[in-house]
Length: 221
Image: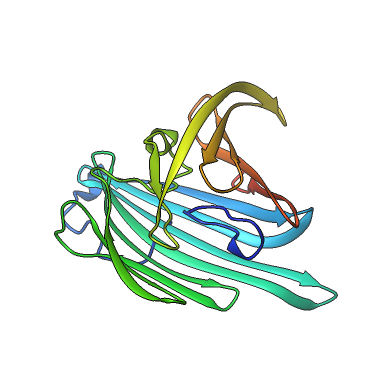
């Protein structure tokens, strides 16, 4: 899930590739995030992330449905669905489908490939590329996964160099939040806030040519 300005608004993120079927149900734990997304103060839609954790790893499902409207006319639409499978802090499988205002993208990983082999389709054609050992996406829900120096954009399958900075604790709306700044080598910086007490992702902000892109948590807990 990676945020980009204008018609490349975001999302590193990934769609159905098999569940963790052998997991012991008693060992499972679920985590859900729901965000209201706006840009320049105008509501766009909702971004949802669902995480299923087991003794065998984690499955992360991400869904984004955004529309930018002006006077009842839709000027921009962004739809993204993805599924990521994680084990021992490393991305093991990824599938995503994206409609970026009419431009179609798809990313899949070749089963059993090590290092991970990404098969990509975009408006200009298809290609393959190998990820670095123990790869990660723009996994905003877990800062430890962001601090690797290079992250995979789940929409395009491209690798992007990043720097993660800790900006300390801020108090926002009565919550103590740790502010981190994720700076891609190419693109706008991404501000992230996680609740200090339990690490839950609460906010995201980045500048675009339409104004500030803002994620605000809806779950209320």
